[in-house]
Length: 116
Image (cartoon, rainbow, N blue to C red; front, top):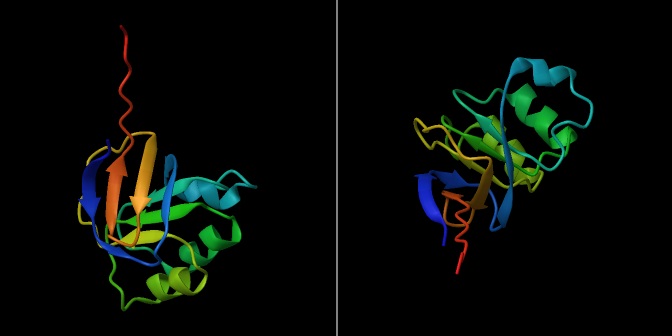
C-alpha cells in the first residue's frame, strides 16, 4: 500500500515509480545520470531546467512551486513527461516514489515484509 505524501497538479495521465533524486545545480554537468530518476525540484522550476530534464530522459519531476499556467509545466506536458507541480513544501522524501500524475499525488512506496 502506498502512502500519499504530497499533492499538486499533474501533467499527464501516467503513473510511474522510480528512484528519487534531489536537484542540485551540479547535475547540469551530468551525462546520463538523471535518466530514469524522479527529480525533486524544491523551489521554482526554471524553463531551462525543465528542458534539460526532458533532454536527459528523467522519468518524472516533482516541483514544490509552479502551476498549470507556467512555461515549465507546459513544456513538460508537451514532452509528455510525468510531473507534479505546486506541491508546496515537501518533507525529506524516500528513495523510491510513485507519481500518480493523473490524480496529482506523490506516494511513498511502502513494502511490507512477511517475516513468518
